[in-house]
Image (tube, rainbow, N blue to C red):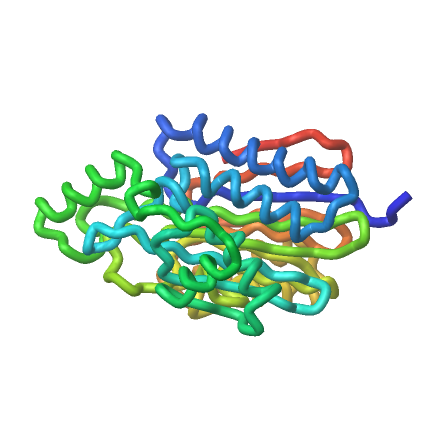
Length: 302
């Protein structure tokens, strides 16, 4: 029997999640955790588990990733993702891609087959085609509510940014997992900030910011205001706290304290340490998440 307890944690964003979407978001997290657990329960690797989990959320219009992603100021979808292997710190990332339904899978292909760590825009899409990953039309990623939201922003004289339309949603998705061999992995996928300038890239695809995984410490996926999360390299910061002896929960809370103390941004993160202990923290009203531990029961929260 393995000494490591297979575990997966997923998140569906940290922000003031509207009450009328709680059920859809919670169920989306539950289904993603189920998909990842199905891999771990069969003895599969953490990398496969987190990719499976994030793909489920990229297919779910309840989240800002893949299908249903926010539109930029030009009315376009631009997607970012990262995946990281805690065994050797390998990672792959993509940014500003427009014709890829599952950016997390493209990020993994970048890690495994490109010889590079990050590809962006048209170059990333060309690589996807070379690798046999199907491309889609940008319209296939568009959800009707996002087009309506974007049109309202333009009509309101707000060509760039969220204000004055209230607190920006941040339903970026992510997953962290520990497999039976003791390997950790992390992934994050997003459509970015609503009404962002074309070409804007936030924290999600940046190593140490949107995600980080190291078998010696832990695995982290973050969500929130990317411009703030980047300033404190929040995912690596959380892993460093684990390295100093903190539990996963202590590290999560400490990293959010750094975010709150050094920036004016909000966010949240999920943390899983090398012993299978879970940490979840945020300075937003909610964070959507689901967990599955060795017992196989899915626990979803908000």
